[in-house]
Amino acid sequence: MKEQKFDYGMIGLGTMGRNLVYNMSDHGYTVIGFDKNNSQVETLKKEAGNDKVSATSNLDEFLKALKTPKVIIMLVPAGKIVDEVINELKPFLSEDDLLMDCGNSHFTDTNKRNEQLEESAIHFMGVGISGGELGARHGPSIMPGGPKKVYERVAKMLEAVSAKVNKEPCVTWLGPGSAGHYVKMVHNGIEYGLMQLISEVYHLLKQCAGMNNDELHTVFSKWNEGELQSYLIEITADIFTQKDELTDSRIIDKILDSAKQNGTGTWTSEDAMSLQVPIPVIDIAVSMRDLSAYKKERQAVQKNMQGPETKFTGDKKELVKWVEQALYFSIITVYAQGMALLQSASEKYNYGLKLENIAAIWRGGCIIRASLLEEIRTAFSQQPDLSNLLLSDAFSKKLMQSQIGIRKAVQTAVESGVPVPAMMGALAYFDSYRSGWLPANLIQAQRDDFGAHTYERNDREGIFHTHWNQKK
Image (cartoon, rainbow, N blue to C red; front, top):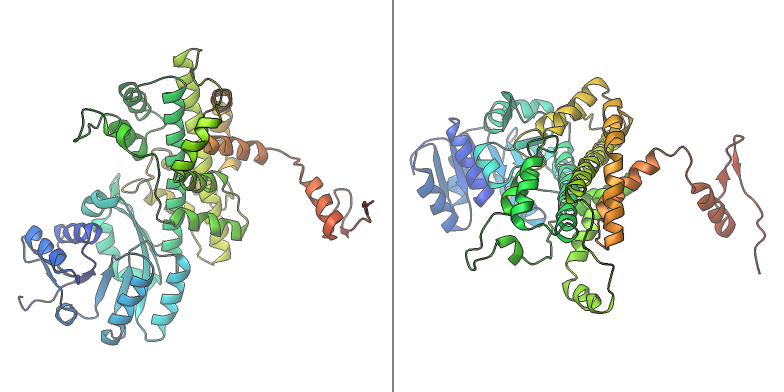
């Protein structure tokens, strides 16, 4: 290995780590990688082909090759492995060295690690990265959290490697501590919701309208040219045309209908419940992935529980129009729920998040990028403290204009026995949010009846309890 000092170190040379190294190298930064798996080391050396990049499986060699103060990026699986890497590195790190965890770590773990390293004057940043393999290679959306002064040390590099929209880098400092990983968690929660909604639309058009893969490709491609334009709609259109290498069929028809998950959607739901922020579309999306895994049980129940005829007998073009409006309506709702959670978390955890900036950096590079985010950015630019997008005049108009479509689509699905729980959740959220009165007074009466939990009145101040006529 040449006696040169590298700008950055990368620990974890899997797909994401390796491609981020290439991206950094393209922008003039020298990077040395470390991985205990020697085959990953050799792959990086072979593919890099320039003196800006090197790699080793020797930790001492890796650390000695770095400029000081050291800046080390970790791209390893979340959980215990991150702690193991930190504990292995810590004895060799000095004051002002910087560790950047760019994996999908839980935000509470990031807080603990930050406190642990602060004692040794070692800087730590939790950084969310979205965009997958191609994003890492050509420009992801980057969500950094941690001390602002520390961020400024690496800001130029992060801006260089990030995605660009209208020449604006899809990265900015989000807030102190675990702000970056929290925003990435909510990003993933929104991603769960969007994917579930799109899959329900697929189910509805396939089962009710009887559309084949070519027709589905055409519909989604057309949608991607309009207000539904997004990365997920784009790749969905392409998925329907992908041929299977093992058969003469389309690959979509050969993939088992049992969805996996890495847990970040669950984390989003858990923290939303802790903060008492309703995000029903995301909650349903998580539950439906769980339900999809019950394949054998679903097949057994299918034999004994027949639903209504799923064939739609009306105008197929009209159904497609309804479904398009339903999807747009639901997508607005899931973004609204995610943003509402970010507003609440920002106050609770003292992040000081600027949702305008978050919407801006999500416009490119990440999985949930969509043209709609430009309008979301504008809404929060005009009203930084907006608690919910449903309170925005622009978005309330959009929902009102598309509510007929979602009601028709949901009605068709219910009558046909096609499950669209996330879509129904979006509609129920809208109907509940626009209701000046909800039947929660009955719930309060029940709680007071069986548990003397008391209640408030709508005609006077104070806390009250009633001696109910209970049956003995």
